[in-house]
Image (cartoon, one colour):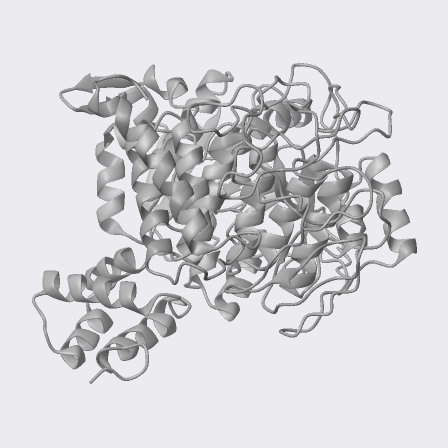
Length: 634
């Protein structure tokens, strides 16, 4: 008989030992954890749980094997290319200017898995002229992964990222694999390290006074006390001015160590401050005053963006606006955005499925345009013009939905209904969901003042910004201070519903700022699928399809039954050219909807019912399948 989430009491006993020894947090999916433990026990030749606990206590290799099962080594070359672009454009030139041409840069990949990350570091340094003045360290808790990394043989899966071509020059095809060149392999020093143990930093290992540390999508696995300890050790491993990159799924480190969070066009990173400097971390703003965005130098276009895929997510990709690097976005006349089941289709450039080729960018009223320029994305240098936002018709009175945990409605003239994971509806004229032919995010009407007071009956009402806070947020956006705007609107709030509503409100004021706000809100609430899904919609609105894929997969990792997210994923993959993946996602959306009563409202689907979304997924699937049966490209 199954008791609670576990089929046998031995599974949580094993996990309790893992948490004690390795600091891993309890898994969010017990079924997957059970499968992983069972596989590890089978490889160890043990079927008794007490015997297995004794084995992993005494045998470090057995413990490593189990940790490999309980964590996901998702990686590929130049994953999250904006981090590497920031290194190339900002960090490396600053190091050379500060220390001179003979300085040896020191980098560390703190959870290197099969080696793609540290080898990407080495390849970047070689291409930037640091070949004889570089030291790249790579560690992992899995000895099997380290063995694969040292071997340096990779398949096409490791080449799936948008910067993969930068690595091909260092790879030699051999059958169905690629063999890494000795020139790159010899630049990386691999060693075993369990981040949860107090054995680092140390000068002997090289993990000491580092210039750059990548510790991405690792901290999410740890419990709170381990995260705090690792944060302090990461700080201690950095040299003065050293830079730390974490992943978007990782918890924020503000307040855990004297690290300065810095927001840039390429994302958020942490920097070790000079001795004696402190970082104020007030409760209302985990970033303090130093969190204000710094604008990179103008010129040279827009760097690539992707966003590090989270735990169990699919590849990220380059951030490219569909209309070029200026920060402008495609606009269509009219204000109504489509609902998940189709809605207002037939926008210019729509494909066979009825989804506009500018998915995520429609729904702009004429004249609401996006600013162009070479400064911060979404702002013309020196101007206060902000970008429009997909799916938000101009003027007051717009209705829409705000994903949350309760249900209810807002006062007229502002946002529409809020709905939880299973209920909700929108009034007529809704701004629409960001997954139909004209992708957008419903929410607050621009210029409508304060978002309405939510009168839901579920969880407590999200806090709406006061008129003074809204005014302060507008001023912050005009000067390019996204963090301040996010803070004023409530996107950094400890309540996820308030943060979600704030992100939607910011989207009416500035689309690019909303992307930042959604990423920050999601980092503070990494287990809330609503925020990941909203982030995906905003990224779609920027034409950043690979980034949107990463975010929607994160939402699905957290909530696999989110049918509308499967539909969005199918449409994103179709546009990315992954027809098999698109068909699989559309079938999943269709199956989930068909398993529900036809009139059942779907979570986060703007009031759409199961039968409508099932029909939309089925129609799009058929359109994709027909060309395949005829031997044509879809």
